Each structure stands twice: as C-alpha cells, then as structure tokens.
Length: 514
Image 1 (cartoon, rainbow, N blue to C red):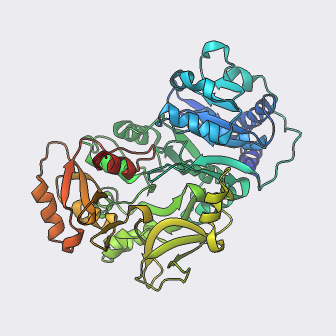
Image 2: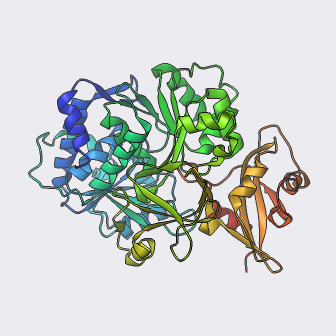
Image 3: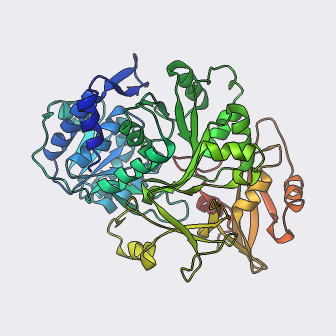
C-alpha cells in the first residue's frame, strides 16, 4: 500500500469530511478529504514538472497545510520528501541538502532569506519554490501547484521506494538520513491505529512540528478519517486556547512541552475537558512530571517508544497501563511499554543473547516499519543492522510482565571510576527536588575519574536551590558514585525541535577546551 492511498480512499469515501484545519490564518482554513486528495495529486504533478522520480524534494517550513499536502504528494510522484528542521542553523540545512542531493527546495520566505548566503554551495539544488510571496523570481507554491492537474500521474510507484527522508536529530553525533519507504510508513501507521484505536471523530491538535517523525500522527489519524488541527508551533497558552476552541480530543507532545503546560499559570482558565488522549514521546518522561499529568488530566495519558528510523512507535504504553500505575503499580510509571503487535522487540547483550528480565542490554527491533537504510551511508546502515536486527542504541531492561524500561542512550551512559552511571536514573531523582523544572545529567572528562557526573539544572520560575541541595537529593537516593560531583544552573536547555535535550551541546559547553 502506498502512503497516498490513505487520502485517495478517504477522498472517495468521505469527500466532504474535514481532514485539516489551519489555525494560522484568519479565518481558519478548513480542508476536506476531497480537497486534500486533489491537492496531493496536484503536488505530485507539479513536482513531476520540475524533477524526476527518485529525486529528493526538501521542505523547510513550520506547521503549514502545504507540509501535509507534501507528506502525501511528493511520495505520490515517486520522490522522497526530505524534512528540514527549521530550528537548525543554515549551515546545517546546507549540509543536509547536500547530503540528500536535493533537487527541489520548498521553503517559507523567512527561512529562504537565512539560507540565501549558502545557495552557492548547493550544486544539486535546481529549483526553489516559495510558500507565500516569492523573492528573487522564484516560483510560488500556490502558482506551481495551483496550475497542476489533479488527475492521477502516469506513474507506477513501488511501495519499497523511499517516501520520507528524515535526518536523525544529531543529539549525540552527526545526523544520518533515515530512508522510510511507503511500506514502512503505512505499517507504522497501522501499528498505531491497532494499538491506540483512534476514532473517526478525532480532532487532533498537532503540537509537535511536522518536520519531526512524530508527524506520522497525521497519517495515523487520517487512516481513521479524523481531523488534524495545525498550529504553527507549540506555545502553552495557544495550545490550551485551541483545545478549548476546537474541543480537541487528542494531542501528543514531548515531556518538556507537557511540563511547560502543567506549570503554566493559566492552565485552569481554559476548558480542556474535551481531551480524551494525551500522548507523550520523543524523549524520556520524568516520573514526577508524568505523575503530575495524570493527576491533572486523569487516566487519559498514553505513550510508546519509537524513533526516526522506525517511522513511529514499536512499544506501546496504553492508558490502561497508566491507570494501573496510579492505582498501586507505581513501578510502571517508569516504563515505555510492551511490544506492539506488528513489531518484534527484544533486549540483548553484546553477543546478541536475549537478556533475562531485570538485566540491562540494548533494544533491537525487527519489523516492516524499520527503515530500509541510511541514505548514502553504507557503513552506518551495516552497523545499524548487525546480526539482522536494527540496533537502537537505547539501553533498557524488561520485567517479568514484558514491560520495557529505558535506562539510557548508550552514548549517554557515564563511566566514572570504572562504574556505569545511567544518566536517566540520576535525572529521575533530581526531579524530586521541588525547585527543579528540567534536569540533564552528562559525563564531563575528568583526570581522576575518567568522567565526572555533572547535573545541569533549570529552576522553576521564582524558585531557588543551591548546588549542595541538589547533590543532597541524589545522596539520599543513590549510590555515592552516581551522585553529581558538580551542578550547573542555566536558564534554558538546548533542545531539538521536538523538545529533546541536546546533551552533546551541554557536554561541549562544559568540557574545558584544550
């Protein structure tokens, strides 16, 4: 099945049902499934007029309707939609464009202006299409797509061809281009439809940026004929206002975003009672934040485990498990769930032996939603698929019931004095301090210990804490070698567009030069 079939089917069966609402314009723009189907086909034909099947078409934009049209339309032209994170530096955009050898860039004007000085370094880029007013004589998206036919392209597209090319966030190293095929994305969507059971009357507010793999929530809900409500980017009060205005039934966000929502002083000023599902993902959820979310919203919270290379989730931690957790089985609050029905997931040691319950190893995965490889990176692909399983780089354990618990990223594990320290374990303890808003634990090179456990803390607004107080929380709950040797207070964490803390940048800031 091709990704665009989701829209073709709904466009035929429910042409007048609302598929998409854009809240960034006045009045809000409403798009039906029939209209979205036509736009998808126009995008496909427009791209075929300026590029060739197999090409990479990049998009650099915020959450705009054109993004959703291209989700489906570019793959329908046999091309790979290449996602550019709008929060990256222009030099990083240029690196990705060159690595992907993109022939087309669809871009909002403000980001084109930032990229302009580097256009001469992009030899593969043949055409720039501008969303909105086009400076420099570039064609506009509205004109190019609007002039294209809404008929089916005369083209056969293979379900194993790359539909989306997403670059890993690079929180621990250089980004790699994950090639996700039509089959990968459709299976990922169906896996989540089966496990999370979205309904046709869903009104889902897209809080995550569409340039992140979490955008797979769009086809997940479109499979069932649900609505997607777009907001340009996440802002807590805007999120609450839109939930109130549109009686939003569900949304998903990173733990950082949920934490910002819970701490917002106006959280009780809006009607949020229509929410029946709040998903979280993209980073580890501190237990204290999760506990606060369930207390505030009730047993409507769910999550899973996934990553860019999987096109979505492969572990599910449903509402029922969260309800168990708040009714006595509190150990489950730290879990990321059990394997989803269409994924084979296990924890293995360095020899690929499956670890017994309680023993920490690496999560490896098989399934039809696993990427086909990294673009033009044979070494990375070979390493990732060693022994025939996809290696996630995440360290975890499972319990006797089959629930998985992420311990740390392999690259975030700290080795101090010959002992392994899992940063997430320390972070969970630090969140118990009432003044801690955000916590990240990293290893800094140290002559004596090899690495020094270092806590980086953002305090809650109006609250204070000392280094000694933060260390004391750790001392009261952890072995001595695990407690931070030093604490650094900062105003804001460096984050990816999905809200994931970039520990690589923290380590770089704190590591003495020379």
